[in-house]
Length: 283
Image 1 (tube, rainbow, N blue to C red):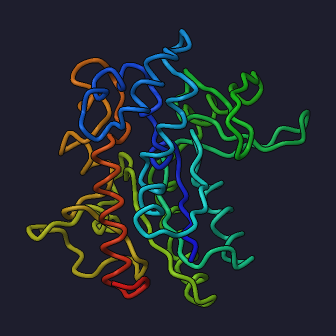
Image 2: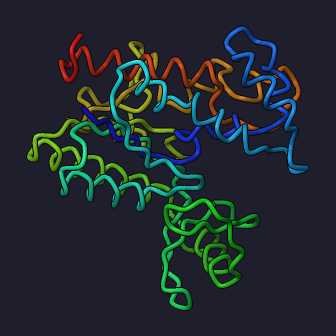
């Protein structure tokens, strides 16, 4: 059995590679003493990271935890600053090529984008901040500063970006991928880090519906399998319950809302619970 995971740094253990976060958790019981000793001995790289922390991050992100708990193969397609176009393309490709029968998709931040650059003949994924951008070569980790791409993205976000439209595109991606997976005999589930600052509350009510929801819609907008957490979309649930690396670091790390190790563990347990409930895996 193979389970494919897709997303951005929120699915890639982002934040758990940071030295300041580790200072806050290093004495926790769940931190293996051998890892603790090795990481502290190596120290950080002067930029707040270390090579060993990248490995430690991998061991504690929810996709790895699911693979370990179920003793199964994992397809890891979560990349820093990933965008929803790139996520859509990779999910479609794997379903088409029958690579893995189970797919867990975390949609990313809507402002991010997939851009082609003629001079290098490559695609890049680029951050969604119009003023502070870094480009990453498609599906690779190395950062690039390419002024043409940064200028294009700044103009796009400031003058040509419509949140409602971008959210509706992801709704369409969700429907299409769900139908395609079903036709191919695959199982697919979706998680939303965020829903953006959108006015289209009616169509998006499924993302954050609770038992007391009084929205006009009585039926979900989609038949797709959307995983929610206490009735909330993933990012909202993480923040509401202080399951960020910032909170977990006990004040050492500032302004980082990536998911904590505890948050990753709870997500892993939720994914396994859903797969067992739906008889996708043995209970």
